[in-house]
Image (cartoon, rainbow, N blue to C red):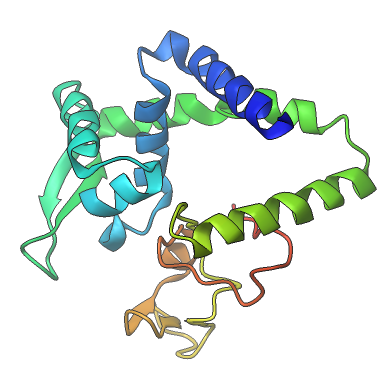
Length: 196
């Protein structure tokens, strides 16, 4: 019951935090997802998975953001059947204004001591990875801690890291962005923390 109450509170908090920006919480999540996801993986289909919605619903969100001049679509240079999402300069500005998105919940977590916070992270981490294993939740994180990530295999180059899953070299910036294919080395440990 506590998780259900928390879910309702998060929905209310999200709506309140984006109220002054003229966005819905899902639109705000979309903009943040595009900003913090590897550009070559920011497809419409992956967005739908990340939001937990149908492809049609994701298209509706993107259409609205595109009409507002915040998002642009681009054909993938790797696969012309795939549409990638980009923030426009106006979209980047809105993302900068979304810095406080989620701050209310973080402030509430500040009331926990270190032991309580670690226990909460372990418990929620177990739930998240269980839902992920069941195909009910997508977990996108930065590369470090992923079973496919190979750090600094080409030192001194502009793309020193490598992802064995997609067989591609990555820049340091790409390695810090979230990947929808993230597979943790230790799925039962603490939730990974994305690089800043």
